[in-house]
Image (cartoon, rainbow, N blue to C red; front, side, top):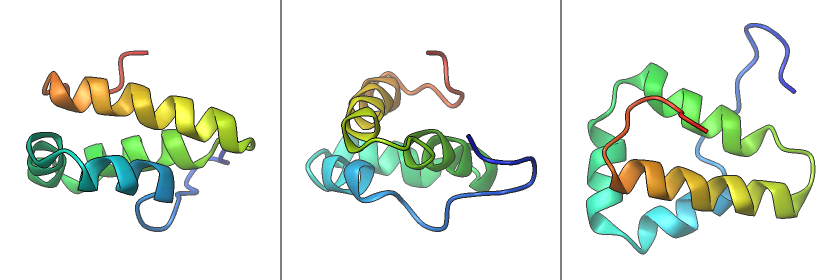
Length: 73
């Protein structure tokens, strides 16, 4: 869990790999404001275990394909 005001730097690798494979989701992600992008990156990147980061990245891609700005897990 990230502390208040703390953020993940950049796009987590697990999410970036999936975005590189899906142009539509990637385009939608890039259209989001910085704060929405940061929300996705923080959620995926803050997981301690690699498997959890992969699962979250997969869920994030579903949400991005559905054009969801905010995380609805």
